[in-house]
Length: 414
Ligand code: GLV
Ligand code: MN
Ligand code: MN
Image 1 (cartoon, rainbow, N blue to C red):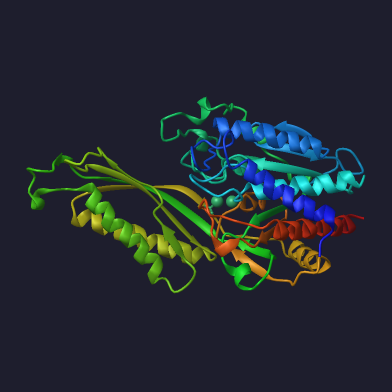
Image 2 (image 1 turned 30 degrees about the vertical axis):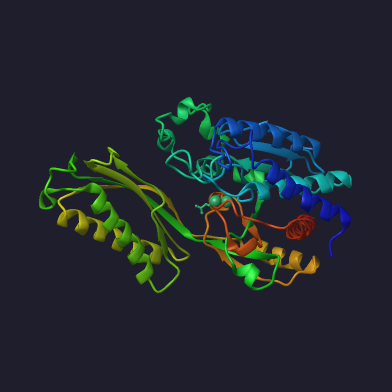
């Protein structure tokens, strides 16, 4: 059982995510899409900044357009526990993938502030701008900038409409100044919906995350020959879309043939010129490959690339492959996992550990401080879908666990 205050905080966190799920905080009609640096993004940052202030934080936007709220500890200027998640969403996504972790960070600070309590460390709540990569052809730009692991070259990108990142409301010359130094942070904590079915199947509200699967992402360009759909004999065609279709199935097969946890997905595919009576001359698509084991991920990726080359050769297509994203597996810190397990017990929850197949900003922050993650049960394991759902009760349990985690972390500092 959680207290009435914590129940109120859990419900408010969910309600705020729901509020952010519609206009003006969404860039699409009838659903949620909040891309990095869009009008909806800006509106969301203003709203969330107000909630951070109300909770007792000093608020700023950093050079990567992340929103940052700081709640000082007993000694002003002390290193911080960073509590974070992302404010952007996938296209036609759910309300909780990302924002819930930010709202819970705000609730943690609101609870401490309401009780007049300060920790031996500061707390900084970050709303990261670009985790999903659903606007620009790169993901987790903003947490990589904060971790100091982003190359300047990675900023030379444009969205699908051709708008450069540099023209989207950030100054790319100072973007990397968002970096934090390791000595400024004692730890990183991210709460997130599980986005899978494990906790629900086990009848559990929350669980300790052990680590995050390795990711690889490619952009593939297939070029054939555009031509008249009525006059070009089948044997004379170099149809880029028919070739790409065979490639998509090869991507699926390569992961299906793996006897472990590897997964591979084609999530974007665009054919040009895109007319009913023209043989497609060019196709671009993305390939996303993941596994908890980096070697396995790389083996499956190599198999995919070899199959794409074979298909292209057999169909006389040109095929260019660009690796656009590569993140190693990221284990959570062993000591913080124990602290999280203990916090679960304090909150009367059974201890359960699980791995994350989804990527999270925690993967990047691991470069500069120990990381911890808490997963929250989501209905039917559904995510990246408007049907995504989490209960206020489970969210309140997560808040209770996070507050215990913060208390225990404080005890390790004295
Ligand atoms: C983010 O949701 C990812 O795992 O791609
Ligand atoms: Mn996501
Ligand atoms: Mn997410």
